[in-house]
Length: 177
Image 1 (spheres, rainbow, N blue to C red):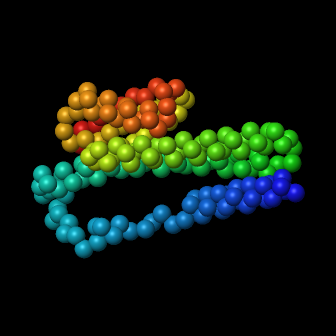
Image 2 (image 1 turned 90 degrees about the vertical axis):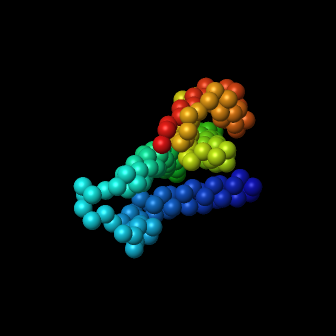
Image 3 (image 1 turned 60 degrees about the vertical axis):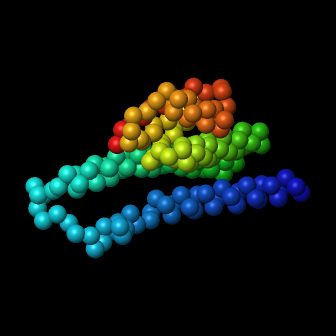
């Protein structure tokens, strides 16, 4: 009886993941940027001041990080969706389903660790950070407005090791705004 309750719970959670994934994929992406409404725009394309160009450059840099994050989320969402579909098939044994479920949990755990590391790096005073865990490597890209030092890199590596352990190779890359 306990196995049936666990199976029902698992299938309920997996169906929730699928429904949310479908909603995310089909949701309207043409939402207007509320921060830009009511702002004065430059009169002509060639009359932009240095301040306007700096704002545009910073926005483009932020867009690169966000694009990478969304791409990574889409890739992981596709992995989980494929695993969910495979779990729903009747051809797998109980052991294979447990293995597949463990893989799904690992994917979500990695995603949570990445977000935790990004938040910890931002709390150190950096404007943005992008963490990507793949193939036994942790790639950390940190956006900073000033020159970085070796001690800053060591501090970030320490944060990474506290979260993911020492069995992965961590690389820190600083990008200047």
